[in-house]
Image (cartoon, rainbow, N blue to C red):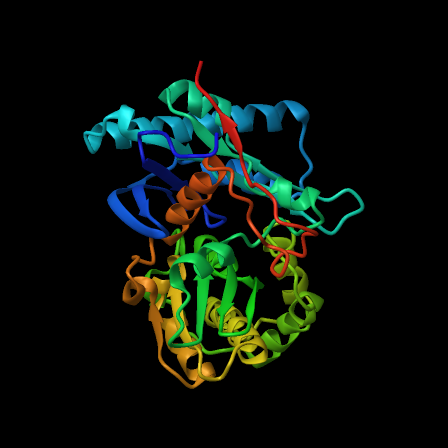
Length: 374
């Protein structure tokens, strides 16, 4: 298949490493300009996040039975949400060319002897239950070609956000943070480290909330300089690109190991929370100041775009205003599902994706696999 079918609408989906919701869009592309027609945010089952964290927090130890069932169950959860979205938006399935299914990342291991990345949420199940071609498994072709399999976003950012008039840095603050540097003679992107994952985790454990809305709780805390210094010593932050990371590395065990290195008796939980906010802001700002042109304008998307405390600190560290991708025409909540809709489109037309400068792959590859309903 080297051209889009008559139907040109693509359903883009995303459930990121924060695992707070399942986001869905319908989008068409005029050249590389995305036109969003409908959007939806769907609540995940109450035990969804716990099922994944149970495995991630014990260093991936599980059984084949548990992993297999979780893969199928996640596909069912996604398919049910997609079908609900189709009904609620009065969509005609004949007008939908494909569903983009990124899946739920449970483990990302690109630097081992036998590198791999694992996303659950069986695309066969989604194709069967929706009756629509599904494109999934977006990352492993890049790993097979010697790449990290992440981040994938920079190639999309370059296609839709790059400008001949200004240098830009696009920053995704989801569970993890990644940056895309789009300049006249430079194209670079990598994961900077934790985004919301540690912030959300601490908020959940100590304030019984899924996330710190607008960063309001963190704003009441006082940064713990000693803790921030300990956290910033992690070797990941000083590694050069290409690099990528995930919950298999930065998680509750990682945070607890660092907390155990000194007494926190004199600190409030709010103080730890604001320190984690500063960790995210500092590592993003440091990456931008190290690799981007000083004139580059900064555009944010992802859940972190709603954390005012985080954005304020990022502006202070960078010495300039940061804006969201709203300014560039895409709401910060929808950039990721639109990204995977775009990747699905590129897969359907069999367009190789060049991530050599981003992930370190040895050559451009066609990302994704097609799953057709029977």
